[in-house]
Image 1 (cartoon, helix red, strand yellow):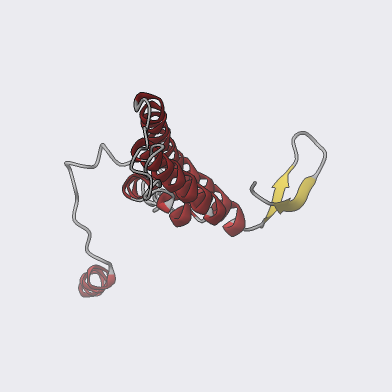
Image 2: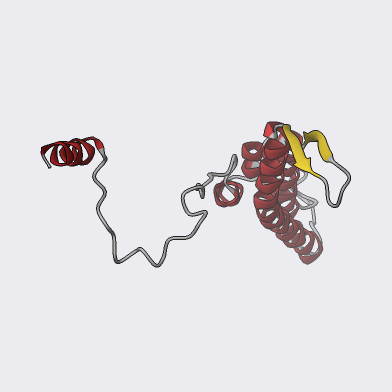
Length: 169
């Protein structure tokens, strides 16, 4: 009996202590331990916010540098040309002609308002596309970081084994 008690004490002492969780015991799944939370390479929400604050910044954040520069230039040029078209008339640069008659103001002012509207439209559309650019960057990063793994598995039926390499796309 002393030997049995000694073995029992040693077994309890070297075995790890585990608490029983009765609340979450029914919620546990077979693969819950292998589930990991992944953070995206580029966050689409941050790209959207950056593109909304500064034209083209979301694309630059996502790694699409040329799209960012083109979106910035197109937005700034359209807004600037709209403002200049609204302000400038026929007599703006006629400094030494006191008899200048500018004519009607509404045609160039309407064109200026339309150009400013197009500039803001381009800004909004480029900001909306910035989140998609971040998703494209995440997909490129996933493909770049994908690793090949060996496959050795039994074939269906009586054909033996299959061996090869899996490369995720």
